[in-house]
Length: 129
Image 1 (cartoon, rainbow, N blue to C red):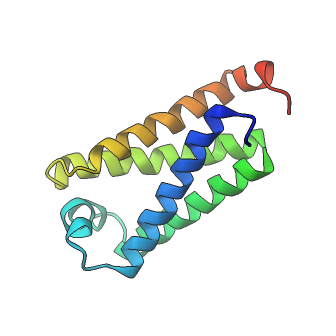
Image 2 (cartoon, helix red, strand yellow):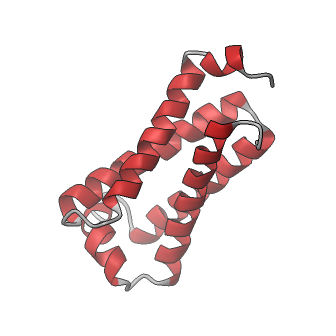
């Protein structure tokens, strides 16, 4: 993983997902969580389910990067970008443009970029696996 510079950004994305999930489970009454997540996320799934999705997708992305699997990276980037886009929209609409909006948006774009590179086979052409 250290030889691939752009993989490092995906690694940080997986760390962000895991930290947000664990923080939400450990400190459910936090002002940050209530301002930016609860109003929107609870309308679709219960709060704990969302936190476990964050942790699960983060672990999956971390594992796919560690195993250097193209298919695993593509699936992980798809799920991570989907969750991060949902988070970005949720923070934008329900979180009153909370400061975390920038991080959510940046990591969503990073995962979409990784997914585009994998789907167009740019990864396969320019990198040895």
